[in-house]
Image 1 (spheres, rainbow over the protein chains, first blue to last red):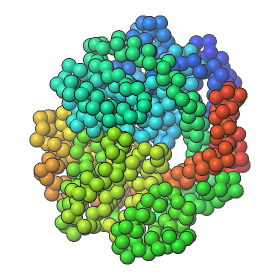
Image 2: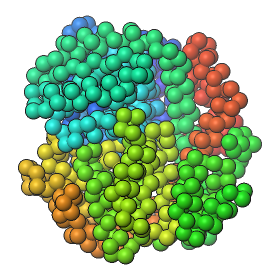
Image 3: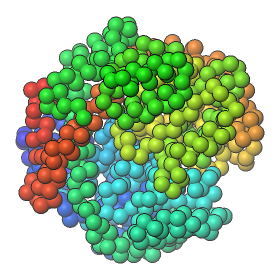
Image 4: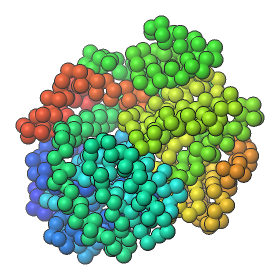
Amino acid sequence: MDAIWEKLIADMKKGSVIALSRLITRVENREQGWMDAMKQIYPDSGHAKLIGITGSPGAGKSTLTNKIAGSLVRKGYKIGIIAIDPSSPFSGGAILGDRLRMNELSDLKDVFVRSMATRGVLGGLNQSARDVAKILDAFGKDYVIIETVGVGQDEVEVVKTADIVLVVCVPGQGDSIQAIKAGIMEIADIFVVNKADRDGADQLTTDIESMLELDEGAGKSKPPIIKTIATKGEGIPELVEKTLDLIPSLDGRSLWKEERVRIELIGLVEKELVDRIKSNWMKNGRLDKAVKQIVNQEKDPYSVAEEILFPLASLWPKG
Amino acid sequence: MDAIWEKLIADMKKGSVIALSRLITRVENREQGWMDAMKQIYPDSGHAKLIGITGSPGAGKSTLTNKIAGSLVRKGYKIGIIAIDPSSPFSGGAILGDRLRMNELSDLKDVFVRSMATRGVLGGLNQSARDVAKILDAFGKDYVIIETVGVGQDEVEVVKTADIVLVVCVPGQGDSIQAIKAGIMEIADIFVVNKADRDGADQLTTDIESMLELDEGAGKSKPPIIKTIATKGEGIPELVEKTLDLIPSLDGRSLWKEERVRIELIGLVEKELVDRIKSNWMKNGRLDKAVKQIVNQEKDPYSVAEEILFPLASLWPKG
């Protein structure tokens, strides 16, 4: 591990936010030596609790996240926020988002916000988010909030490994049930009905309750439903109390810890493997050659894939 | 390749929908011999055009897809639909969805609908959808419609390789612009403002136009905006005409073909690699052992990942 990593880790441990920020960037970019850096950071992690916040676009997740962070800071906790932002060139992307949020939270010294764009990190989003969470944990954060839109498989996977998952719904958002059913109903530990002053808030609450009743046989306790108006701060104290109350009880979920480590380990190996293959292929021109052969109909993609995978046959034979 | 594959491929080529359906299932499940099967199927593909339809949950994508399919069938085309369904146990999942849609389309013999749940296919969704599209192509479909929610990175990747992409927006869906900006603005070839009889349809159209003007410098032609009321069939003829008109012109996008092959090839190798590692790890108990070591704090996940990746060092060295 080179001197830059050593210095960044040392400075981060001393509390430098700039070192923390640079460290995160380097790990996200998988710069040479990142695994050795993570090995050194890892033993300091294990203290922070992860709060996952998810819901459909326009549900008010960012505002809610900021208010929860504010409330936790006032209770004396140190907070990290990882905002997963499916950004587009139109929106200005993650960097603009960071600035806006930093302004809003600028009076709160103990909040560190990191946005991660989903563009260009295909297949590695979960792992990157988990690495960043570990670094924030090692930095001394008490709670790390991971905020993500709840409608993509990767986005849902990200919050699955959190210690507690808040699913945010809003009334009057098209077909409200359709918006929340998309794979996130079953991972909710708390339902938040945000924008609760809107028409349809009571109906939405009833709809969620009905769905939960269908699931009652499963033996797990029913997630509470809490109404909030995040922009006005209404309902936030109750939501934060409930969240803090629930976390210890969820910790006891059977096999939860092993399952989480399993998911993390597979994610880590997958991402590293894919990164290596891509960079090697691109470097030696093999990818370009193969692409041309397929375009010219000299070969089919399945034969090419098999050729590439052939050296692995002895190492990891076909299932 | 065993006799089951041979028979299924032969029957599929003769037009058996049951063989087609079983073939798709076996390829999706990566059953032994699937790559050889795909090699045999591949030369018959290359004719069908892929239409990607995406948008936020509740935008009416399914209804729109059904109407477009119906319209194309009446024009004499054979249609395949791949519906990517981020399903949950609450919704009944993909199978229920298939049945509902099949009922609606049952008078249309030339439509084949396949739903793919995103649960459990982490990281391989795109590749699975592409394999299914190839099979439908080889089966003789003229157009394959891939319908997916437009808010996850994987879900967006799926439609990126389509020949044309329709982005569906609806008025009054919370913060409408926020709902559509999520990484899909820039991949739209046509914008569809669905539920156009609702309040706010004109405002939404204006908002999209303003956003498109910001992007004008990029040199690509501005995507048309078409209003529809899918439930009543309004606007569908115009939308279908526009879609068929645009496809040939989009075909000429520079480097498009090579780029698509590149994405497909990387996706293919990635998914196969990850499948192999997982199945090998699970089989020989190595994963369980590694997980226990991490839980017991004997090792950190990064060291374990490096041990597993070590045999690859000579094959694919670190970037």
